[in-house]
Image (cartoon, rainbow, N blue to C red):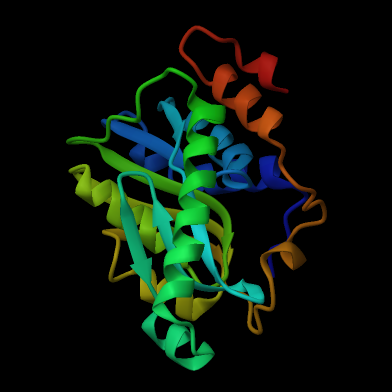
Amino acid sequence: MIRFRDRAHAGRLLAERLRGFAGRPTIVLALPRGGVPVGFEVARRLDAPLDVFVVRKLGVPGHEELAMGAIATGGVRMMNDDVIALAGVSARDIDAVTARERQELARRERAYRGDRPPPDVHGRTTILVDDGLATGATMRAAAAGVRRLEAARVVVAVLAAAAETCELLAGEADEVVCLTTPEPFYAVGLWYEDFSETSDDEVRRLLDAARPGTRPAEAV
């Protein structure tokens, strides 16, 4: 079973699986924060632009690690009705969590992109990258978001995920690339030797380093 040293190592391995997209009209969109170091390596090796696509999980109140849905750039909201019913979450609670996470989504948009415009995915193959998937709620919202922005083709590319999550996303994307689908899965962090948190500063640094005219060594 594959185990990754860190997100940069994982990104280099993922890029090998995606090298068929090199030379095409492609953009790499990383889900912050942990997807950005992965996406940086993918974009550099495909010679493709890198940007972020901000998604926020909507956690069940009192059990925030359990996703009842997610929101994404562009006003997208995806809900998991089964989780909502099982947890007995009220409409008022859903609205409250959504409002709070929308504020954080807007903060991250400003923090990562500043005055730069949102990514232009129209007519391009869009590769959505993250360091791993558990429920897949955030990635589903991201896929729906870029489809709304008229991406020509949506590719989901991740390192570690539950097999059933990859199968679920196959209905949301044109192609799904999962490097490893361990069974049992447990959690994304188990499949990395170094799964330390990615900071906002690191996200900004990598996005700046990926801009045209910047030498790759500046990101190392």
